[in-house]
Image (cartoon, rainbow, N blue to C red):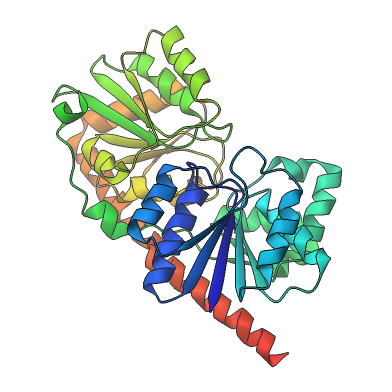
Amino acid sequence: MKVLQVINSLSSGGAEKLVTDLCIAYQKQGVDVELALLNGQQTAFMERLVRIDPNIKIHVLGDGGDMYSPKHIFKLRKLLNQYDIVHVHLFPSFYWVGFATFLGNTRAKLFYTEHNTTNRRRNHTLLKHIDKIIYKRYTKIISISDAVHKNLQEHLGGLKNLVFQINNGIDLKEVNSAKPYDKPELGFDENAILLLQVSSFTPQKDQKTLIQSLLHLPESTQLILVGDGPLRTEQEKLADSLKLSDRVHFYGLRNDVPRLLKTVDVVILSSNFEGLSLSCVEGLASGKPFMAADVPGLTEVVQGHGILFPKGDHKSLALNITKLLENEEHYKTTVEKCMARSKDFDIEDMVKGYLQSYTKALKSKEEH
C-alpha cells in the first residue's frame, strides 16, 4: 500500500502534529508513506519528522505564502496516480486535491480528515455549495470527534454517509515517559505556580482569556504559552497593556512539549471551538489537572474528567484554578480522571482505524 499525506504545511497546529505522527507511525507499520506540502518552509515538526525518519519522501509544492494559488491543482494532479491512497488534511489542500480529480481519472482512493467543528465556508452560500461538490470527490471523510462528526453530517445532508469517525490520538508513551524540568531550569522560582497552554495563535484559540485570568491570581502564578501564529503579537501587546509581561512567557514553537507538560502545575486550553485537539489529549495525559473552555470539540472530551470553564470568562477560569491549587484532594482526583480519559485517545488505535479504512476502500475498488 502506497500512501500520500497532503497538508498545507507542517507549521504549528494539531493537524500538522497529527500528520507528522501518522507518517512516523505508518513507516513503523511498514506502510510506504510520502508527504506533500503546499508550503515546505522549515518548521519544528518538519525537523522532527526528518530527524526521526529521514527516509520519508517529502514533496515540496511551494515555499512561501502561495498556498491559495490554483497552480497547486496541477502540481497535485501529477502526484495522484502514483499512490493507492491520498489522505488530505485542512483547507485549501482539501479543495486543490478535489479540483485535481476533475482533470482526469484518479487511481488513488481519496480520504479527507475533518479537523474542526466548523469553518467560515459553511456560512457562505456559494462556498457551502462548492464544499459539497468537493466532498463528493472523496472516497471517505473522517471526523475526529463526536462534535465534528455531528456538525459535519448536518453540513453535508444527503452526503452524510461518506462520513465516519476515528478519534484523534497521541503517543501516550511519549507523554507518560517524559522527564520534567526543574522549574529553575526554565528561569522560574521553585515555588512558582506554572500554567501552560499549547496552541497556535489564531482566531480559533483564546489566549486572551487565559492572560486576563492572571489579574485574579497571585503574583507567583506564571503563564507559559507555547505556539506561534498571526495573533501572537496581539497577545503580547495585551499582556503588556495589562502590566503582565513579566508573568506571561511566550515560548514559540517547541520540541519539548511533553517535558513542559510534566513541569507545570496546571494545563489549560482556552479556545473558541475545536475538533478534537491533540493539545487537549496531551493535557489529559500529562499527569497534571487539565482545564478547557466549555466549547464544542472540548466539552464532550473533558466533561466528567477534567475541568470546564465558560468560554471567555477569565474570572471563572481564575476561580477554578484557585480551587484546584487550594484543595489537594480535588487536584489529585482531577489528575486521575484526566489520565483515565486520555487512554481513549491512543495513537495506536487511531493508526489501526486509518489503515483498516484504507484496506477496506482498496478491497472495495478491487471488487468493482
